[in-house]
Image (cartoon, rainbow, N blue to C red; front, side, top):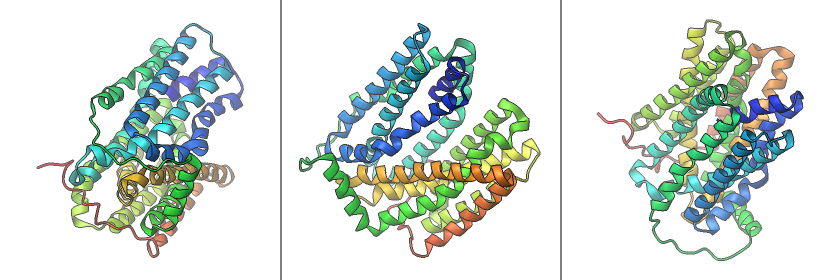
Length: 378
């Protein structure tokens, strides 16, 4: 809702395409600026208190933006500043939020919880813009910002009620020193290094489908675009439900390799299919494969590190994932402008297949990825 409201509001505040595009840039820049310090901080302080701070930060920023918008006191640069502040809060929040999963979920259900969390993110990304569009159309951007502010109170309520078990305090040191310790740890931890390399190989190629989707479905209009995103999100939810059972029969590397091949095939098909119903099926299948891959990567990143290093390792994982997607989007978008969307999708599908060769030297250890049937029950 936040992104839809901010994007639409900017079109009303400025006719410059640059200003409109800067809305997304303002939300993304904090990832590259502070995600590593955010991970270090999450390993140095009480994660529950840090999350209460970041969630409250986002409530205040979103509510203030909503009130200023309703009072017609907002301008283009003010909107960009608040968008940056919200992105900053989200980036400071993410490493700590992911790092607490092993603390609130039993080890047997950990992988399933990560899969569900990832699926929830994809479903929210699909349904959120549609819901945000309805709110903006019915009541304006200001109310979409206020509803976004209200959405954080559920998490704040959980954090207030959560009784975190005691943890040994870490030696006091600077954030910079903690970040450097994280780099040294990853350099000496082959399993963590492997998941970062595999994540980079996947994210660089896989981002083409979602990045070029608005162009792919241009003839189907805004409603078609929203429906295709919904299909992708529903596929992710279905993939998360199937993941525990699939893990009982396949190794982690086998599961990731198979899902990558499926995603590559769907990426190629998206550039060749012109019937809307078939395109919906392509996006649904791609969503299921997407969640299978990222859930495995995410679980490895979380379980391969001790608690005192987990948030820093996750911040590096998030940086590689988001950075790979940002770079990939620019690369495939530029290629599509030169050779066309179908050809760009075909090349990105080939890149995904070539990226699978990283399995030879960078295997994922599956001992911790039991993925017990905690999502799907008979």
